[in-house]
Amino acid sequence: MARKPFVGGNWKMNLHQAEAAQLAAALVQQIAADTSVDVAICPAFPYLASVGELLCDAASPIMLGAQDFYFQPNGAYTGEVSLSMLKDVGVKVVLVGHSERRHVIGESDALINEKVLAALEAGLHVILCVGEKLEQREAGKTDAINAGQIALGLAGVKTAQMKQITIAYEPVWAIGTGKTATPADAQSAHQGIRKQLTALYDASVAGSVRIQYGGSVKASNAKELFSQADIDGGLIGGAALKTDEFMAIIKAAR
Ligand code: PGA
Image (tube, rainbow, N blue to C red):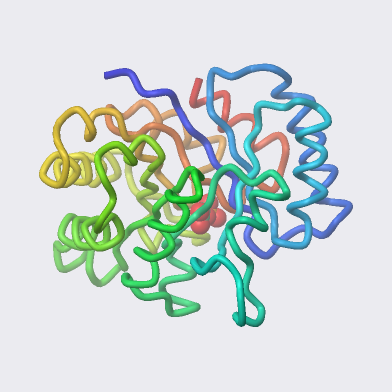
């Protein structure tokens, strides 16, 4: 089944106002009205509104994404940002379960599930990130870890809501390290994820959910990764901070 490629740029805690605006403007210009690949960019919180305005003013097909949020609608949650606040500034896509939030910040599968459910309820598109650590890969547990994170992350998500879900397979050992999974290893993990989606939902859902690969994707390895049968684009960190690199990755997904 043909799935439209989807490439996300996760800017993480990088780029200040002027750089964020410059990168967003360059992408707007180069992508223009091309919708052959779905593209999302996820700036840091302080710049969501200004980048969102820039995308909106240009009527760009690039979607504004947020790296995080809290699942409660409002109230006494000092430091947190709600989904309605994100929607206010034009956010369409949210990342949930990124390995840096799981393993650096300490988010649990239960919190990740609350976030997935809240974002779906708010009508946003969710990129649910999963992936194994190095010792888990070495112990042959890659598929089991992905399956567990998917089952817990998607608990309570209805079949009809799966249209709003993208999975990002990001092996923890490959993120920001320059080490990339081989196309064959990534394909095998993606196939395992699709099998898990078939078990949790059905073959039609599994065949239509996009699964991005993330972990040191660059212009030089994107084409080979994206040519794998079950890899439908990528979630890009470091290489999303440079216009040329990111554009080359988007082109590789076309
Ligand atoms: P990276 O990050 O491309 O820098 O490895 C990917 C991600 O964390 O989404």
